[in-house]
Amino acid sequence: MLLTIDVGNTHTVLGLFDGEEIVEHWRISTDARRTADELAVLLQGLMGMHPLLGEELGDNIEGIAICSTVPSVLHELREVTRRYYGDIPAVLVEPGVKTGVPILMDNPKEVGADRIINALAAIELYGGPCVVVDFGTATTFDAVSARGEYVGGVIAPGIEISVEALGVKGAQLRKIELARPRSVIGKNTVEAMQAGILYGFAGQVDGVVRRMSVELADEPDDVTVIATGGLAPMVLGESPVIDEHEPWLTLIGLRLVYERNVARG
Image 1 (cartoon, rainbow, N blue to C red):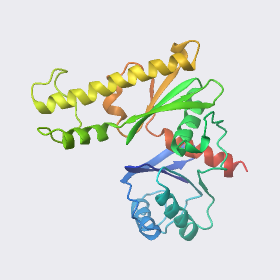
Image 2 (cartoon, rainbow, N blue to C red):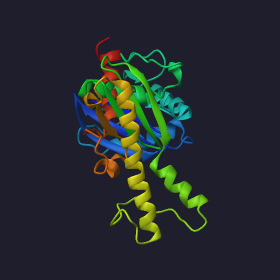
Image 3 (tube, rainbow, N blue to C red):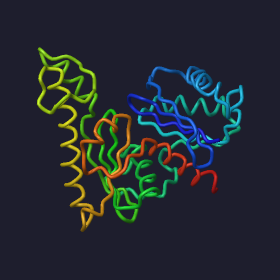
């Protein structure tokens, strides 16, 4: 069994693979204050009752793959793998780890590990050229060429950030539930805000992806658009440019990176 851990700014997603199949997954809040010991206890609580795993931490875990956008959490997870999984091969995605994805950026080290991992999984699953739209703390758009090169991207404020900003900065507005309104034209303040968020972000996705596709390929229609991230389902039905939805894209990418760095030598 392979344990994959994707640490984002807001949430951490864990996946358990049996071969190429993801058989279990968990989502927890990301807390940069957690120590390695606290993380180990949390992992034990999540995995301890799973039927495919034993009662002891690490039972039936044959490998670990981790990527993180939060350096302090990556540091603590490194300690977790050393202290509690010391005899298990572990891959932490950082400079020097083989991904097989050429990064055509002015400064490749600036690109978040999760974005490269997403690009790898997208190419493996769907081929190129493609655009990955990740609905997380930020909404990121990553462009991958037909040759599997990471050629650049776009970063925009995420859906939850926008909702919070409206609630904080709007004198007569408040934080709302992220839900689909009855209609585009809101009949009350809450529905008007929900419509602005949902249809505004859908329009943003359509506009950005179409412009990226023109630059990415001679035939923009040949570009496959893949959505991922926890908030992707909210926008899927309203954005016609999205071709595929893969909620576990980053975890799949981590599995592929593990195979390239450990399983295949």
